[in-house]
Length: 525
Image (cartoon, rainbow, N blue to C red; front, side):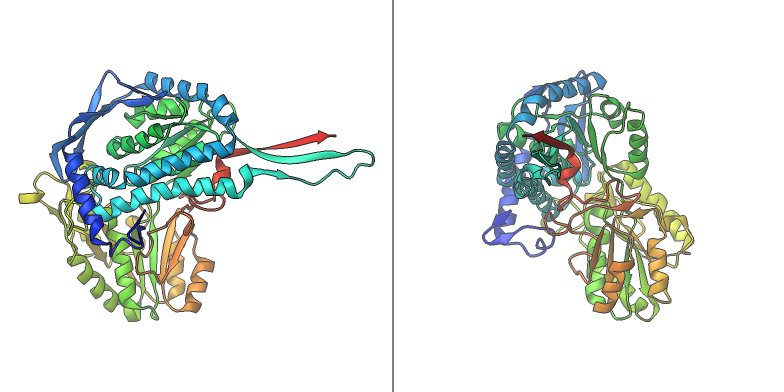
């Protein structure tokens, strides 16, 4: 989103123009006036209701009901798949240039509605206002980038070599073509970007889509879905179904009429879904991102102030509930005390509270399960090491009806403790001193995950870090975020090992072909 010469990204959001706050506050008042509205599923271009509904609540004040959404069952999921299946022949036969034009309309509508969607996201997810606005801007850019790649690659139709057969003239062509119906299952933490990004890629490629958002955060995804609807996509090309993942999500993922699945979420849920898909009659594509346990390494040659700021932002942005959050820090012994002191000082200055409030950086965790997890992890870690700051929940007063946790730094936990390798997804970061960078790298790589990683040190050390770290998105000497802040077209986002299924990163050069299959065409003339 460009505003008064200001391009809103995760890297630029720390110093926005005043107009962004004015427009956000107006949008917030508008969405608050609509609290409690009931929203249907969007199937074949129409709103449809289920027999049961559920309430989406504000995690900063659970007395506030944001909206009523459909608690869909397996039958409704099948209806959405049937609508997508019926729409596929016409949509896949639509010239790719026309699909691109329609998807650019979607991106433009998302951009126009940034403040409305961002305000709803702040209340639904608990993101602070700048992170919410940044995510909506990223959503528009992910869709636009998919369009750019389709155009840059001429619809992925390429002339191949001519057969060297005497007397035979042939034309050989490689054409990438869509699979069919694509299911997109998105998480709570980036509801629009991790819905809109894969949906945009699947649609511009010629697939039709059913999207199923997290039941913790359906509101902003519904507003995003209205952008797809209002852009004029043919009925059934895009469909939205809300409801429990264990019921409607599982039913749709089991359907033999679903040709591909994009899932972003936890390792355990993702692996169960992967095994479920493996029961199909043949191998079908799975584009999965399954979390991270992301390290930052700080060299004795680092700019300590820059390192502390980048680690704080990545550890506690969105309350540590990012798959890219910095949850482990390995610091060379000569600078350990200085880094820890600066990190604690920055952390204790974080403003905690209602995420819609301008001054607040850290809002509530998303639900009661995360709230209880934070308490359990904090208790366990206080027994295993030392709490440098935080470690407690906030209750009473303005915190009484929300899920508020103090940002927590833990030290002196033995490196063989299981929480060094377990994704906690709460505002806790663990810090260890190491003898040298070799030890730091060994510990950083000794996990099943490989999503993001950060480093602070000399230029020569940075090159060594890039060559040796096992992760798909890596940053060096970045004050904006040690392990977070990827942007479409700049930092393609995806993981290695347990963090990713394809080895190709979203918002990058090689992502769009994941939604296409190759057909080799030979015509003898």
